[in-house]
View 1: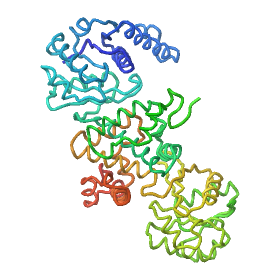
View 2: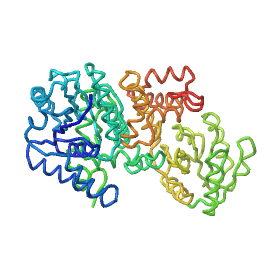
View 3: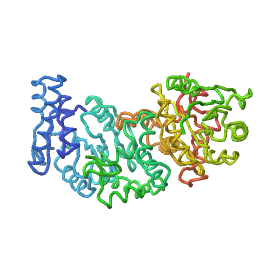
View 4: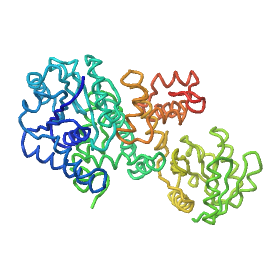
Length: 284
Length: 245
């Protein structure tokens, strides 16, 4: 299937980045969010990012303008999706809201349109089964910031058709991304492994084996990890990390994923990382 | 205590690296061989660094011998990657002066990380002295309490084990799992690349040690065991998760 028009639902952190990536690859984009202010905020972030690219002479002002020109912001869901070939959904991470949205989309979209969810936490299978087109349902998990991170997890479930899979893999390549395919399961591949890496780091601190700075330094100096688990927890936010760890533990039901005590205590104390000035480290 | 002279027992990359940087720092280095009469040669050293093969019995013998030959104030350090510091300390009459200094070579750059392993009886003075020594030697060091896998192997072996579970259950190909960790979250290597360079036998050994001392969650995936059975130990045997020619 040839893709011409893409609808991106949600203009937040992930949605606006995905819309930009698609527009830069030449696709016509409908960027939709529930409120106009969200849409405008997303588009202004795209302008700002492209402005930076122009400043660094990575593209001309005319090219930047053309990219923004391919993105139409809107709040009307039906208008956003009715003629789209692919709908990339990056709305709130709430399974009920997502399922309701997909049921609406099922009525509004062309029957051959593909639904691609950017979820990092919800079951692709469960969302697919809320539609009448589970064969055209797939996960397309971008990483933050979507404009810069090359990888995309393409998440298939038991009913995803080969055609849907091929179409989305090709789309990823056209977007300049590296797709990797995995089966639907909690955390997919990347977050599940990242969870183990975080947890074993944090567990050693809980056990009194080493301090955060020693654990972070060891992984960075010995193996060139860009950040250690404590630094990354602080950067992403302790609350986000706590929610992710808890979800993995609940769904995979294995000891490896149990939230470490230090993470729970930081969460309860409101020391949420960089954004509050204190997490595992202090920030000024 | 200031370390002015180091006696190194055994050979290898670590000995070469130390000789180079310590020379610059004006710290005297005596290189000795396990086969020779190292006891005499190291008698003037403030710190003895043991690079003997990874066999507990051999290392115990070295520690006993060093304890008898070295000045009372000298620090005895093992470079072992196994949690043997407290056991080795018990072979000596100076358990407070026994410490682990485990070197890991960065696979991408010419640099080392040292994990300073504090045994149960290692004194703070000893830790301070080796920290200063490593600063002089221009080596970055971290400190930990003696525990299986230390910091690095515990994290990496745990990641490898989970990745093996995911690969066995056909969630994704090994190539895609490795690639995803690199391109989605900037890991320097994928889990299977880590496994092949560490050696599958070593990964399984660390997981077994951790299972025994820390609990069942570290139990190695059956696939790792079968690979060890088959002799697919990684780069060193030409085949691990990947084939090397």
